[in-house]
Amino acid sequence: VGLPDSTVANTQTISLYNTLDKDNNEIIKFIEPCPTISWAGPLSRDRKFVVNTKSTEDQKENLKVTIFNPDFGTSTLKSKVDDTVNRLEHIFMRYRRFGEGEADWFPALINLDDGAVEIDYGATYASEDSYGYSTLDWYHGGFEGKYEIM
Image (cartoon, rainbow, N blue to C red; front, side):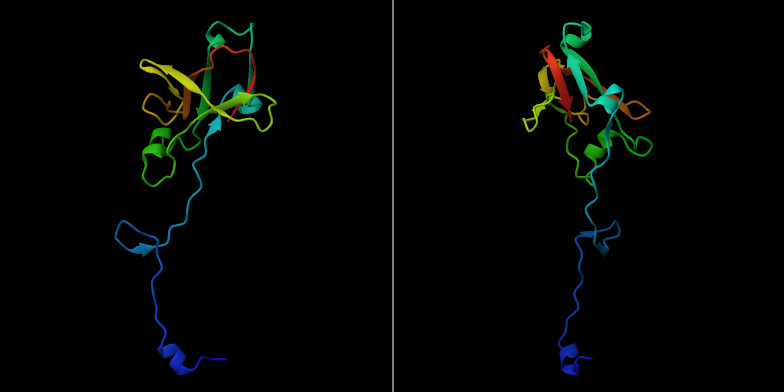
């Protein structure tokens, strides 16, 4: 069934867009998923760790935590944060005691020259090697127990 000519004559065409491309053409751009980042080393398998009296001297207050950037061939972690195209603002680490169910996650800290700050793998103090790995020293304060991270 066709529409009467009077209905078609009174229609209006509009362009839908939500951004402009590099040539100022109106386009629709869909939200892209956040970049993928994964744990590296034993944490990638276990996602938990234990701090106790048998921990090494280095591990009693600080623990090296490494993450992996699977896109290392095309972008660094810093570029993912600095890039205005991505929505990624920070790459934080959180922790809680293992087995506490729905307990709150706490921000992990790192000791820097000007004091302790929240670990951010996208910050200027973080570095990434040419294979996409970035390791930071998490200052956990030496509290014994089992912890899980995210």
